[in-house]
Figure 1: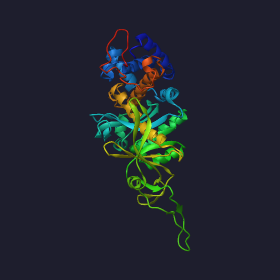
Figure 2: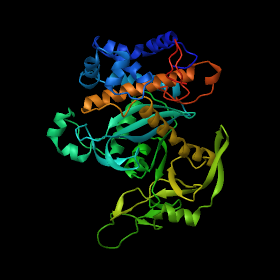
Figure 3: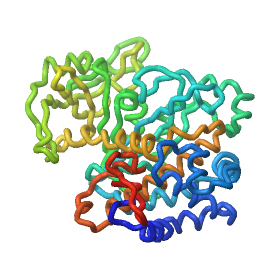
Figure 4: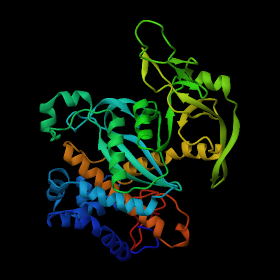
Length: 427
């Protein structure tokens, strides 16, 4: 695990930590395969698909290990509840962020459930892939994923025979990613996960229904948006003028015309240097313009034109290369520039978690052709990641007293040498 943790120490701590999960697994036969598969994800190795894992932890039982993950009908929901409690105990609180995002798993074939030609963040373009909607809890730059749900493209949803062959539940159809995210958010809240705000990139933040869904749940949020997002000045008003005759108006008159976020910042914003926290090499700072505005996400009054919504902070970040990024934040009017910027800049933690789950725990290595297989594999990867986070946060060795996210999780770094009686899962 860590260079200073012996094999025996690691195994004892892992078995103790895993007990609440084993208690809800159900069939006793699975109690053998679950720890083996998890150890296969945690131990060193370039590939974390079934055959390489079996060769390391169960060389004579590859078929049984594959059946446990891909075909055995155990329900991941009880495990996800334990995971939520574990991660909340480690990272939850009034300074934690709940980050909504998605992560793509590139696939060459066409048989894996949910695979389609769609945007793949890992490749930066449209490609054949599966997409998982994710929720990540993060505090002090330490992330831990708590939900991974497969996004079912419309082409799959319309082909029920294909869905049946991939064991997609009959009640499951295509839903927008933001709806999946809100459902998973409700599940996290129902299980007592505590956090300060919800963060998301423009893929979710540009959706008015998603932002309104967060506000309806009385949650603070900070999300990316597109520069063409329409906004009104904060002082905008609406009224229903009296009419002496004719039909009453369906929609109110608006005192100001909307304009794009880009135009609004050009007219009303001024950039200044904002430091949001101290990094390992000094203060983290950048150029930001921050103004109050009302996003145009109220009722639609004409084609493409919406009434003003509730006031929010409109933020524009000017990057070093001159590019501009735009955000909306529902923090109160008394919020400081530092707190607003710190929120929008905290979303990166989920990208770090996604990268580590793929590169070091094999999230994208398993060939999951069925609905149950991909969600089995996903919850097991999240459990493995949560254990590594637990080790990082609780290990009292001087090298780990600072709170850092898991790195070099599977010992693939050149620094991870082989020493007898030591598990080099993390260096």
